[in-house]
Image (cartoon, one colour):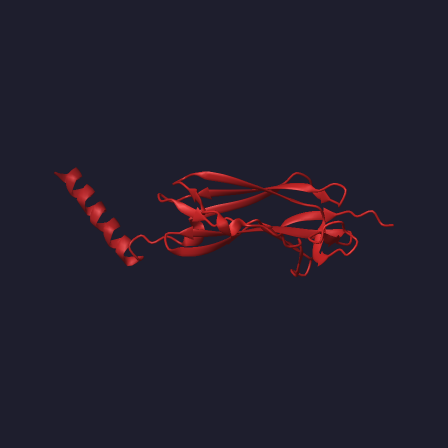
Length: 168
């Protein structure tokens, strides 16, 4: 009797608390975690780095990640201004979104060669950016994720990266 009464009381208290805080609604920004890792703390045009962007679905429902060619990250100067990487041309709009099952994990690979968003007229390909000056920059991975019918924009904390260009 007493144990059952305590259990029932707890259930009703929890239900009341859930209603009070919005029926258990979660902050959508916490629904999927995002992390970026680099193959090296330094980068140059001659030695690009590999980036791994990990997404973990922390909900009990499938979330969708719209496919795009990237870049999946921004490069920021010390004052927070976006300085790279250059844009990319692709046909990603033709692909369906990636489905990330409940509690599933997905790693998206990308790369960066220390180039900025300004195009390099001397480069063999028109999409190559001009090399950024040597110095410390931050990489911030960014990813849109569809949780239910709501689009959430995820981003990582800045990852400091040193650009080392051969000064000629």
